[in-house]
Image 1 (cartoon, rainbow, N blue to C red):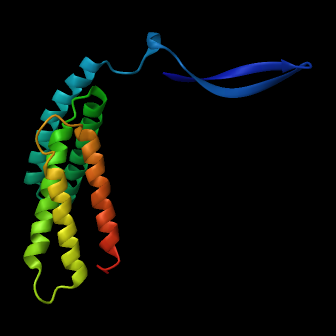
Image 2 (cartoon, helix red, strand yellow):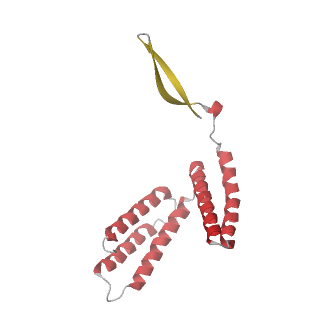
Image 3 (spheres, helix red, strand yellow):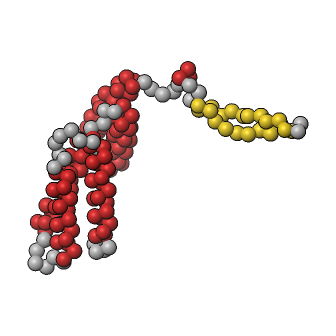
Length: 167
């Protein structure tokens, strides 16, 4: 728990107030234990199922947007807790990201024809090479957190490289 305190410093008869903050130890901790966080993750899973159902059953755009907003917040909170407790599925995230890259590449490749510009063909080639590079890591005992970061970075670089042509 953070608590603002004042530090008094006396110098030549004058008292000066300096502001600061101090983190109190475990005696007054607002941090949840790992077990409490794991319990909250389980509760969030049930809450997320209800919110997904609410989105599907929304009758108006407003209801849909509200349900979607609640779902996004819950998913974000759940992911944050999973990262804090070390239970986040980085391998699953990596596999999903890799699938999305390949799916996007296949769609672009399917749309290529004789009238396609050279940069479009090059983009598809680079996406294919990127997919092949990371496909080798799909299964195994790898650091999927780092692989995910690297894959995201390379995808962002590829997107930025060809963004000027897509205008």
